[in-house]
Image (cartoon, rainbow over all chains, first blue to last red):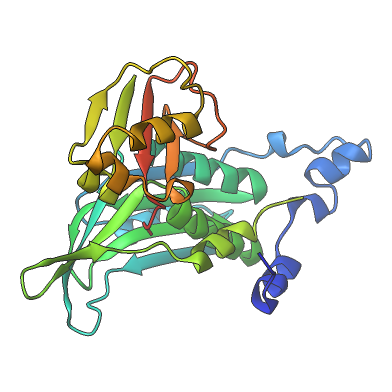
Length: 193
Length: 83
């Protein structure tokens, strides 16, 4: 896919642990002793749930340490689509959904120096105004937290096995929501050569 | 081998899962999709554009060129739309 000016911009500003002085593979290649594997394991909190997600509780868990200088959270909500929608139904693949979300979170924790990371996704019927998904990343500094949260969301949309179907206010079941090329493009911009 | 279907693939085929015994010659994910498509109208409706269909073996995403050897559960579904 042709790179858009937007995605070019984003990749130019992407945090890369390898460019940090003394960090990860850069130091390893130069014979340094710092290795990404020596970073403290961040607390990872992932899951799927039919119930509501308590964003305040997630924030409290991730922000509670003196080492945290930045916490980024993203919440995705169900829209009413101009009053047309009664609910979104989220179908998921039990077992694989949890596994893929955990894999995405571990990848984020391997690529950015996170202190904590949460990725929670709901399934079942979700009413307009309710949350569908929450991701949160804490770090010493904001760049890693912003970028890891953005990475998590891009992969939650394209690699976690969930499918949305519309339920309309007139009582009928609408169609399955179509996947967007822009979501694939957003995920693709994180690929490394 | 267990097959699991999701979203509109599940709806069009009309069942959520089934056990199948693969005929000789069905060795990759692509072979499986082609074989399933020929099993009847409902399968044909679900798999009319096999190139957009996503597949997971034992809960991991795979390409259509992936061999089926060792697969216990193969899931077949449309592009994902969560988040």
